[in-house]
Image (tube, rainbow, N blue to C red):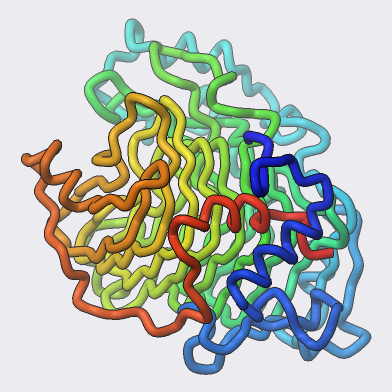
Length: 437
């Protein structure tokens, strides 16, 4: 990610940047009477996460349910302790769930060269998927290896939990947080290096030439309510897609998403995070199918504000069904940029007061991508310092995918809106892990 600058100069004191951002926005979410991050709660009116009962995480935890952890085993034990009683888990340093490497998960007999030899298009063709392959085949051994990794790197987060990083250098590598069918979770001040799928699957039938498919989102909010993700950093880190090899003529993709909000999840606020150096970044709603839609309609209410989306390819976010409020975010694109906002089935996206920094040759028309016909509101957005009607620019340059204006609702859960012109300075100085303590 690029070096961050405030008022045209490099800021060495990151705490000063955070103070600047908070003083400008007047947002109280990252501040409370307590200086203990574990005791802080989402402020009233701060996005969809504050709706109804609000999001307090484990702030009410007693002393017996406050844990400080430095290892993956200790972290998982702390999650399990006390069930859904309020708990605070403080993470010190960087916890690596795959410290022993991918070989630690490989099933006996699994050999990637054998896998490539058996399923190459020249040998296997492109008409038959691998689902019927027996357990002792290269695909069967891959499945067993993948199951071992799945078991090892996923962590189920219980209700009434706060997970916070201690200091400026706390986080996780190779971890997939599962916020599934629970209520009232806070994740703050943590740097996440996206999990690397050690055993992607080749699907010969995916597209005209086949494709590699990977698993493991960094964080999944699945059927859960009242979740606050604040001042975190999500990145591919030491394993960027740009360094990945190709096999069978396709990128050997080992990353999935950075954040998914799916399957009827509701009341989520994502604030002051950095999402950087990734391809398919965020999904709100993961399927157009009618069976999924039944559970998603009327849900998937998510607020994104004061986040930095830097050097991403797409999905910041891609939205289906949900009422999503995205304001005061900064989007920085590079030459690989595909789009920021994906307009999906029955989505009701409001995208206002955002700033885009696009390189020469990348049009503002790419900020929006129409997957389905769903009206959106996109007012007061700035591109390279110029106020730009994103819908009008998109429709003028991509008339075959005309977008309609007017999401049909007006967000009210905002603690303060900054001038869009000021968003790059404010967000670049205040977003991300290591800014809170």
